[in-house]
Image (tube, rainbow, N blue to C red; front, side):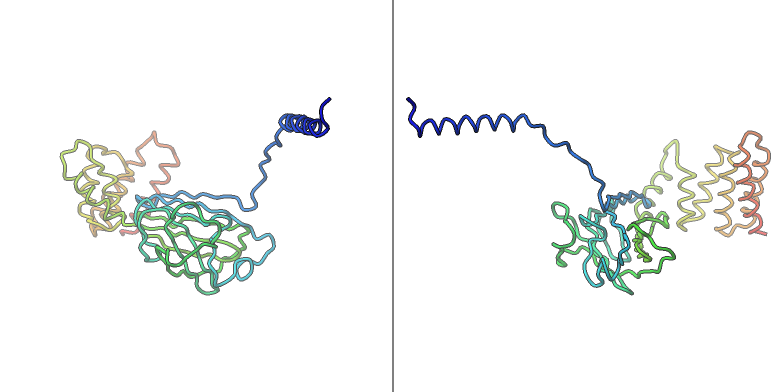
Length: 297
């Protein structure tokens, strides 16, 4: 006969084994993917030769007062929801005049009724949740920005990069009826001009005459070189009326009115004689050349 205490122990072990087997056979709960209250947004934009990427989470008003309410004035804000907003620059840049080296940063703000403080901090390790661990001693740059009244309410917080040029853009924060612009400047000219000069002075068989001429034109650089490069490019494409038109723009900016008039008129003549070009394209360059000719008379 099995002693009572041993019999109890055996029953306990048997029950445990049975229970373990039952639990092991139970199916795992299916994973449910719920919608995020503040979904993530990503912006990628090239400014000149600089690649910029912003990753942030986008909260919505949902009937709440945002600035001075949900987002208090005078307190550090993650500039979005969930993790602190991140911004990456592939080259050095200036934000409202403040120098920011190439790298990835967390973007914080301190909203105010008449002035915001904008802060960038280099990312140390993992993403920071909110702004609870923010420490001013880690700031890479700190500057101010002026909020502007926006004409209609923006339900969901948005960040945009617009007003693009070769050397600058505007990073704008939108929410409620507020827009906060931050000017981004990148030194594309200092980066590109030495490369352009080297290539154009080389013995390379194919040179970027059109692109180099337009870059110099658009950035108010050496217009004599720009005009000469465009003329050189036209030697290989004498019927390219879009190039003749832009040659006229360069000559007009250079102060050569007679040369600009001749280039625009030649472009217009080529447009009218081109029977293969789409009508819309011909209309566009007819309009552009007419406007250039009118501005020169």
